[in-house]
Amino acid sequence: MGKSLVTVKVRKGDINKALKQFKRAVINSGHIDELKSREAYIKPTTIRRREKQVAIRNQKIELMKQNEIEIPSKKKKKKR
Image 1 (tube, rainbow, N blue to C red):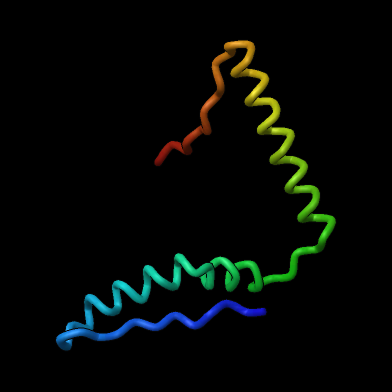
Image 2 (cartoon, one colour; image 1 turned 30 degrees about the horizontal axis):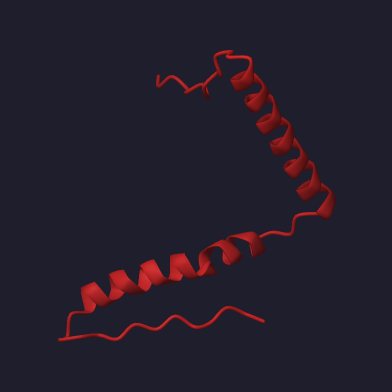
């Protein structure tokens, strides 16, 4: 079944506050995440491969923490 509709009541004619509440409710309900996931078709094998890569990376990080090895941070690109 789909997600429930998000509704917000406008109180005292304050549309800006109602819009802010609406945006927050839409994000929290998961509508945005579902929309992004449906933008393009991703093959099931690609999804499984990504999940496996993330699991391997997390396992390596946990092993490094146990052995008290410094965890490398993500490299930032230099601005030119």
